[in-house]
Image (spheres, rainbow, N blue to C red):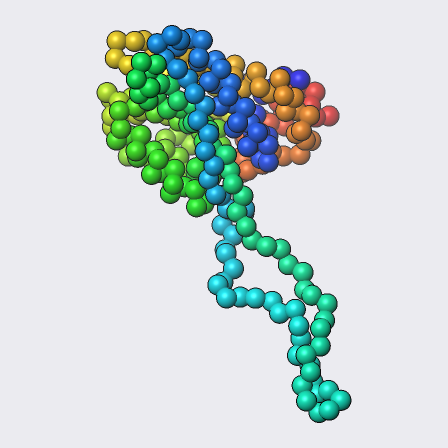
Length: 258
């Protein structure tokens, strides 16, 4: 079934997001590549980072251990005896590697990075990964490539600007090399389609359009995300009463709720 929402599907922001992140980045690369050849190449560059298993969960204190042998009272000879007991059961704290994909537009002649397209993940916006992504963003902003940042997650820190953006759930930010420090941005309401945004290239070449809504709807339908989502329940993350009411009405209108 097609995406039941006119824009972003807020239900995708939960456990399914790693899959959505991968599929959307790949679809963006697939969409752009035919428009940019033969002068430019488009790559989906993958890397793995270590992310917290639970956001904000404190790590255990160093040196803390749970004994699996108890020391009891006096034994038959009057001394202390170590008696084996059933072990206590806990859960190990460990970090999961999280896949990050950057869509790169490169000049074919010299492989120079022309534009980087980042579809943000939760680890880019909060927790231990926030600092790493801030450093990566700073490198882009001080470098010779354009940066297009696609933020389809309601939770976490936004692109830093001198004045905060409007209080809307989704955004696209574009930092063009020749306009820095100015940033173009598109606030996206929950009830509106996502925009077609420009992907800038080298001087003298016109921007190429990227239709985000078409890309999201394509993977939503192709991979059947609706089969993995429970639209009878509220979506993950915080909602205002107005947003929650609109989602309920929308799902009823498209027969996804009774």
